[in-house]
Figure 1 (cartoon, rainbow, N blue to C red):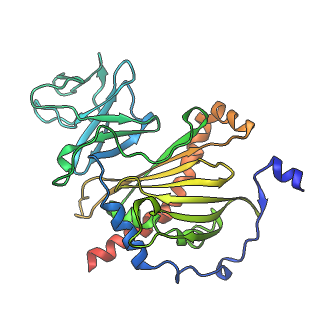
Figure 2 (spheres, rainbow, N blue to C red):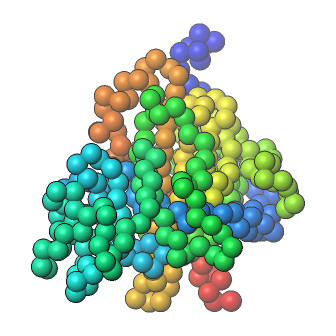
Length: 331
């Protein structure tokens, strides 16, 4: 038995019936969750927002998204470098979200105006950053008084890039970024709300309201379901590197160093006047097991499956965030 456990991360789990698991509502203090969310929202951002997954921004046509109420388009030049600018053509305001790329520049489909990395009068490009998994854009006009723009985003922990596998999924909800953070900073709901994914989840430690930044993290013991009674138990930490991101890092067990980054990018209100937020989630998996290297060979086929699993979780979690937003709006 011991030899088998050394070969595989799977463990036979003791999974109680859903209604018979240990209730978590006593520990899931609304005040504690609210304090953690407020501390995260107060962190500096440097003006950076996640725009999309890196692979979504291509070199043959523009990628468009509204970020914090502003139309943004992104594209790549012939070297693969990332660029971004306003989503409206400075000539007559045409939308650039479907503009083709020619000679490293966007070409407006209305009258053929080229808009390149250097910009032109009335159309200045935005700073960008590509971390290899996600494409970021900096919008200095969104910075609160007193906060300065930074050269790069505040990134959380990541495993070594050379041996990692990544996938990105996006879900849009009727809520604000703070509602997404509140969902992620409530790890107690995991096994109750997502019994199809988590066999068990126990919060080992939670940050105090007055904790220093270095201790502002949740430590959880969680078992991910794989098949039947088998799953993978790990220890994971939840922390917030910026005001719109929650990172879950596996710190002990199979896949140590792997992360799931949940980024909440504000869009603009919908036709109903309610806020809209894009939840852009990056799964960056890593393992020192020799067989994990083969993941790279099937990465293209595997990414849609991983993204689909992430979206399934967020089908429930976005309902949590939207409900929180609706209750706050009613009050």
